[in-house]
Image (cartoon, rainbow, N blue to C red):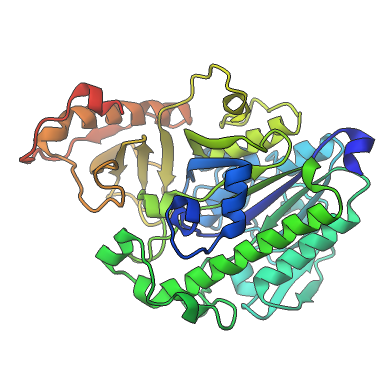
Length: 451
């Protein structure tokens, strides 16, 4: 097995698409959608506050592959391919002697099938650039490394999971890095629907709904049953992949990461499903298990998607390249003294040109309504757009921006946001304060502003 031959752990990423954080039982969902995820959260390491750095597919995936912000890679919106000279996780693991494999949705190329030069350095390849365009829920078609179409049997989640099990089974002699990238629970574009496996939609239609969706409506009442059915099947596939590792005596020597590219707000915050700074769009479920993570418990720091690539390298005993802009969480797990940021930084494109910071208690966001989110990656001038007290209003139903009672916290968060913009390599913009309005509340103190 790989441990006895090289001493290096295998690494597997189980990557879902558009999955809300509160689909997990450990985050309060009462429907038992994710028992395997919840078990790993108990026994491994649970990233309790996990956030994307860009709530849309391509940009988030560029960050996950490179450990760099989308504005650094240039992939600030969908449709911009990863630069040919970009260094990805596949490159770093391959140079360390790993076999690298990619299965599923890529969304970082210009062409379909994805040319070899646009595959981010992965050796084994079974993928589509935009999987929702080459497949349907029961008609899974992807392309192999020779650009030949491959039709796989079964519901799409199962088809990808089965392919992953075959890769695991055939890669036991050397350590492997496998990136398994699902489409689910993303909507099927050709239908504007969330088609689960047969029989799964009815299990969840009309049942529990998160408070933001219950209050704001959107398309959730139409789509939530199918969406939850997709999540359920994903968790079942996650369990099967873990079972495969266990049956091959690889589980104890395989680092497994489960996470998602962004969340889903079901047309409550704009005209589609993501691309906003709200937690429904940016907060995702994240767990680790395996060497360095088993028994890690519930990590309370705010962790960004940008932190996961350096974490994977560090956990495997590999150096973290200086070009990566995220930070490994391994020192946190070792209970070392770490000056960890008290906020996460979010870039938003396409639906708007926006930026936001989120602390444990507060969310502060700015937008540039005069800019086109498809053509403009940033702006030199923003307007204050929203402020939420997440302790009192965790589902962000009351916007406090401009309230005279919250001027102190707004000033503190504005400074933090400008600092994070600069750290991400962006030019520091002008931020125009929101008009002051009467808050009819007590004044928020400076101490509270820093929570």
